[in-house]
Image (cartoon, rainbow, N blue to C red; front, side):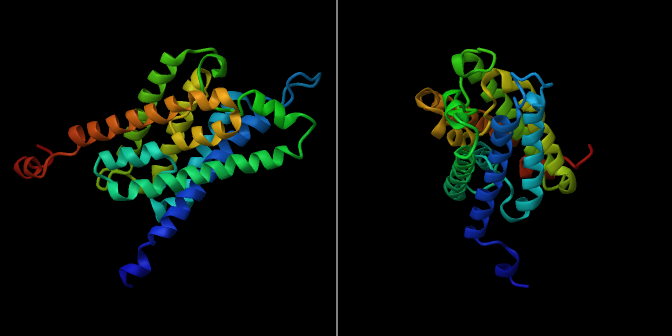
Length: 260
């Protein structure tokens, strides 16, 4: 076969990124809004899935997306991941803008679908969800546990960096295991959410943050910049560090035989 028959086109890759991001955002935000607190305030036992359910939902969504769309686009679904991979030399800088635009669109469509469903929900469901921030990321009043802006900044830098380091490790062309990469990435994101949901509702993904802030009200939009800037900072630091620490220079690799 020719390369044109085996290599997805740029347009196909962008559609895959948008669909993968749609799956990720509708999975995590849909769970957070529809299922996390289901049953609260009633006489019946709480049937909500809580923080654990939300964390598992995002992990499952990533696993499904990576295996479904990863072979087409690489399965980034996250502007920070795209930029981190570029910083590590794993992805062309020239393609980053297209990927990021596709990811933001996919996330925004996902939360729009949630709003459309909410229009047919119980009385005041949608208004209450929006008044509560629509699962947007934030600090102070938007933080589930009341953490301040400093906690959000540190959390987003550190945990986005860790996430990108995991991705770079499990997808390494010679040391990684492609068959298990999606599972490792999904579990890593689940772990990150388990730790950080109480801090700032967990971003580590600007597309996810933009998607919820659109419907989360003025405070969510005012705080959005933190969840764009600092996940990207963490991802770039991880990409640069991984390349410096774990990708030997060609000359060094030739001079020192592997295993010595």
